[in-house]
Image 1 (cartoon, helix red, strand yellow):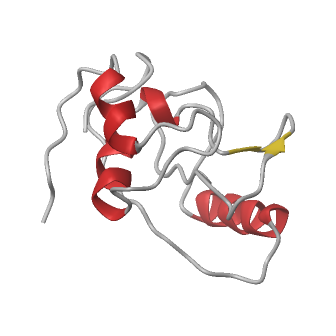
Image 2: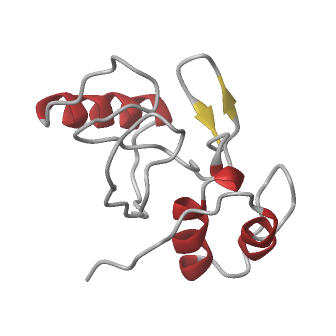
Length: 119
């Protein structure tokens, strides 16, 4: 997909993974940040170029709102590259805060970026 946020250059390869774990959201976040660091991720510029970016979109039915972690992810409705795969995997699920389906959110999104499937 095209870069989102107006800072990064080039295109990104995005994917969505659904996992099951006994870890807490904080343990998952710590593991994610270790993976990002091992793959060369630096955090110099918000939404800038990066080798890897892993986000937690949802964590079961939990709501987390801290400076370091926000779940559900606050930009789900604004990112077409997130909404398209969420809609494919969960066509009937509603966002726990807005109550809208992912299809509704996609229709209302102002994100005009192109989503190109990668096989």
